[in-house]
Image (cartoon, rainbow, N blue to C red; front, side, top):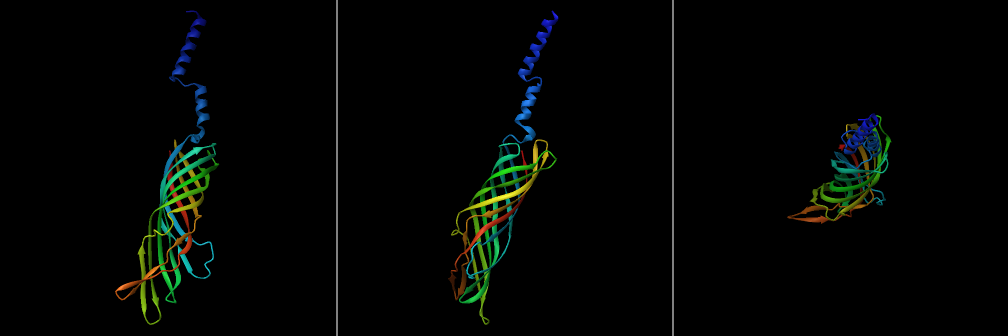
Length: 257
């Protein structure tokens, strides 16, 4: 076989093998890197879970009708998410989370014109659907640092209201109590969400640690009614609801695939 014919035959074999994908080619590798630089330019999904530190806060004056001292409810937060890249640093993130919210309140009211402090617990569990933007401030340095911001739509799936206290006129002490659901409280809530996180790339996966803050935008009329025993019956003391908003600090760990 002539030399130039042999070279043509060899070149044809190389082109055929490259086309069949049996040997790598520089163009294909470059295209792959351009399509997926650092693992950030494809649709990814992940799971996360952790701690919810929730409370209720008021944003409007109550004309001294109530005196409220609030503390947090500790609960669970977790779920699944997907990320859709816009650029290598900027992504859109869709999540579905189960978040336990609520608070513990000491509410000062008047029952039968007697100042009384009621200890109240509000337990409210939500399925939240946040739509977030994610921006990476640091990339490819062993630890990737990002921020999150967006809005969340929430559906209440479980709730519980419990109250205890005493009414005392100095001579007689009467217990008051309540234990019920909160079906009268709005089913839906909306929140503004923002936070920060770090990712640790491990092969094709990314371990993450994340903090975020949920600020409820909807004022919820939380109940303060109580039942007072009167002989063999009970009297309902129907105090006005307390207008408060959900807030929660979420600390979660997860993995993105």
